[in-house]
Figure 1 (cartoon, rainbow, N blue to C red):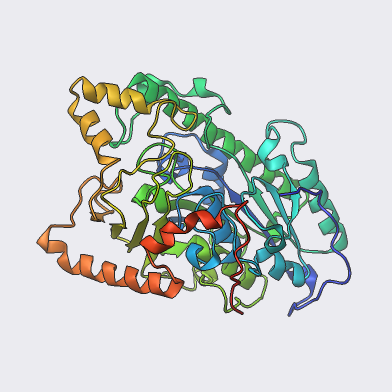
Figure 2 (cartoon, rainbow, N blue to C red):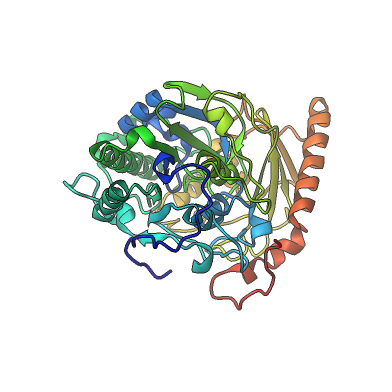
Length: 470
């Protein structure tokens, strides 16, 4: 995507606001990259997150937030459009939405906002995402004196003109390679490994570096939040931080297991959100744009799948949804299976997973020598070959999966105990299977047939003539 500096909004914008622009809240969304939420210190994990700890004390922390696809590109398209991946056209990785699709950039810009995105993009086409772009939130050192000059300019100009802004700040951490942050702060030998990990020196070293990158992301958040204070903007700004899909270790990113689809979410809005509050309401990434639009006193377009959860943020409601949905596409991803589609439906307590082509071998960039710039997988294979039972179980579980899976995610968040054949869970399995069928139908998702055409949605493939209906 061609980048351009932040530009002032012209006077010709169509104004559809219901209240004066000066009363509109500013909106800030900060997105991590490949971060398992349970690794965040604010969620009880081992990565130190002082800025997020403080933010949670000032706002609301969600425990049941989900994205629809555990890969970077469909996740970001999903957030910005408020549309689930298959319907928007952006269900594989390295993808794009159908021509004519609108995003948060259109709706807020037309309401008088300046709408900017700084950092990682991974979206397209540009006509669907007319942000004011810069790279600095991804590239600048947050510990420097003035790390984000373009964002500083946005804040200065917006405050001076009385124009509200929406800033989406997209980090590239803790995505591989794990090269940012102070890894010496995490002693590999003292770390507690998740139960799906195989304990090898390579695993511990990569995990330590990964945790350091989470702390680096926390420093990025701290620097941006400090800028809001410096410009005296915090009191009228809704800030939301999300962790994106799970980490690049097995059974997280690239999967519909609980740690692949679950996200951390913290929101602060002084005077609107109760400090130090927690919510277990089911919310999805597809709901973020509708929530921001309602905060700006705008209606959610009928083309969106998401629904605003502003009433949860303000304390007017404690629940939002009953079900969440997810999908994963391997076709076209680096070192991925040719056609291994996954679909999922979940509640607060259970997750149902359907592997569309389960007779194939499931693989991705992690399960190969060198991994995804984090080389630990072969050490798992070697330990299994030496007879270690846990290594044998984990390396066998990743490539070969059954047609259906069901997990009690309250008791088993790492999805180790498949309950699909347990007669006690027959009713839950049936309910979630039916809900998944209905969701797929509503999205035009034909399962294996949709997976087979995933490569046509990649950037660079000839333009698909289908457009999003009005």
